[in-house]
Image (cartoon, rainbow, N blue to C red; front, top):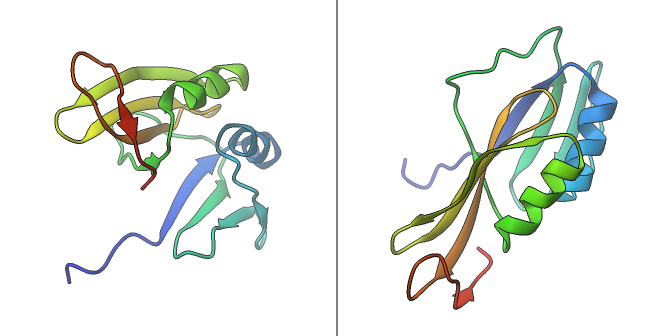
Length: 130
């Protein structure tokens, strides 16, 4: 089923309130209560993200999802301003654009993807939002 795409991502956190504020400040995601120990962001375009309360977040070699954004650099600045850290800086993906990785306040790795065109090095001539 090639048309089947991911419709929901769940992020574990040890503090729902702090995680809710972090993701709002960084990506503009406005999480709402959705059951006991759970918050939900729904963009009403087929993608939902949940914050799930856990006792401990196990970080390491886990699945990483990438968020489509227009400007990686500004998002990485917000990550650092809000207590997260940069795992991989803006990196060229030949013929596609750029990606970066950050760690949220619980150590979860989240990817960023910026579609773009470039002529040399990491200079961006044009970018398009996906």
